[in-house]
Image 1 (cartoon, rainbow, N blue to C red):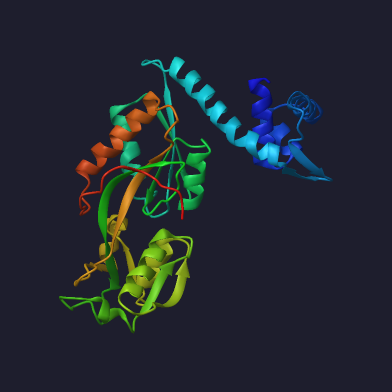
Image 2 (cartoon, rainbow, N blue to C red):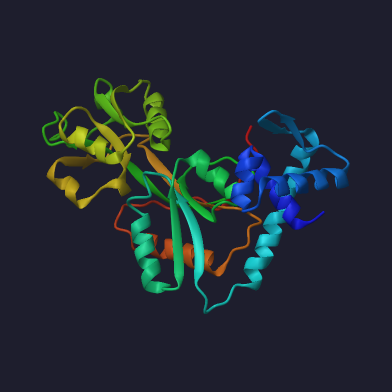
Length: 312
């Protein structure tokens, strides 16, 4: 059994196609197929069900895939560790959720450029389930996301808590009200991000804790759209404090919600427990902590680091 055979096998399983896997591995499809056949012959087990153009893993293939990923990650870790030259260019690939990517990531990257000019940062914006899966599968080094994240394949390091603030237009009836509670929002029209957003889930949970269902009149996929609609006084929104921008002062008011159970969210750094922490990853994590220490947004202490338990 050769390492390259395991790579071919894992890629076929990931892509669900011999053709796509061959393209990704930069090898001809007949050659890749032959290597999979050679691997099956050596193991005396069929690894894939071949059903016309469709393929799926056999029970033996499912068992081998889990172990193959571990083996390949260890090989990749060894190569990175051996090649971790202090004077070389270092790389890190980081994912972030949409309510963090446009606001926190530029600050972190700017500070990376200043403190670590040899660090090359690649970024991806996506929702939490896809980021966690990408970290677990070794496709990215780190992810910044809000809690809860429950997946035993990753380590979660809480970084900070921030309040979720009420967002209003200057013309809204609550604009001049000094104290605003959940009861004041029961009859309001809400403008919310889509159901894939973790913020939307937190808002619904907050409303549920206060015994009402938010009346959603507009759903948005972009924060910029949400702010525009709120500015037109078409409804209210609840957003993390970190999403505030200087230009918002022209059209929007941000207010803290009073009373017990005022909503907050906790942001965490997610990484793989067995992935080699390269110099680039170390530099990026140090920059995250440094940036947060200087951040102007109101933050509360984070909880302790934790290793996730299985979903249940």
